[in-house]
Length: 321
Image (cartoon, rainbow, N blue to C red; front, side, top):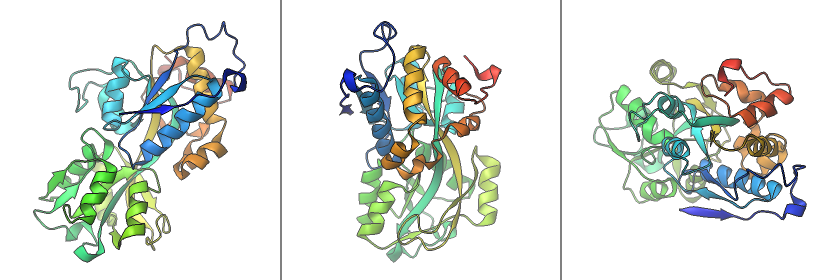
């Protein structure tokens, strides 16, 4: 599903590039996001629209299964740009993509840091589930789309905790509806804070959020490519206490063949306009150039590397394309 993004007029485009400089630019661009109702969908549509307006080029966002599919579609050139969490990106780069096993994703390039993805879990208060220990055998757990970050890592996490449950894939809004209708017992997700579908559930029904114990958190960090994280009290109206969680960084990526000057301007548009990014989603509080160093393995697109270096950020030589 493609969502159109209207470009601003060339006369209003916030770029100093001449027509000659644009000669190899694409006529339009596409950005892979994830399911409707999730952070990727909101955040991705927002920055794609910013870029379209600033550069005067039509663009659109594509609803996808999330990071694993985005990496594959950017690799093949079916998408120009996309968004990934760094766990699936690492797997893809090394030929271990769950969607395209054996295909080394050697055409994906980092362009800018986004934010940390926090791992969430929620249940209806009426279920009595207030912790992972409370999840009974045979419970149905929503884990997001196949190929997305939650759909990839929550099954690994819960199986590592010894949980004998049924995993159900689905989009953000779909799983929210299934939780309300009693078709799933627990809804797990991974996304930027606050996660839109959880905010909507919080407004519509009585829900209980639950995080890890210190022991559970340590075990997950020891077995998965995640870091220590805390979901702050107040992230959602009914979340009254901090919750221990884990997180994974997100980066925007581009196909290596995109023109350097085009990618440079995309990066400049996003990295130079954090207040506007914050209007799109609160998770953009971390969409800052100084977080470039959270990428430790993915090659940078030359256009992105040029922008960061010109602005005082030292892209390692081994990651420069």
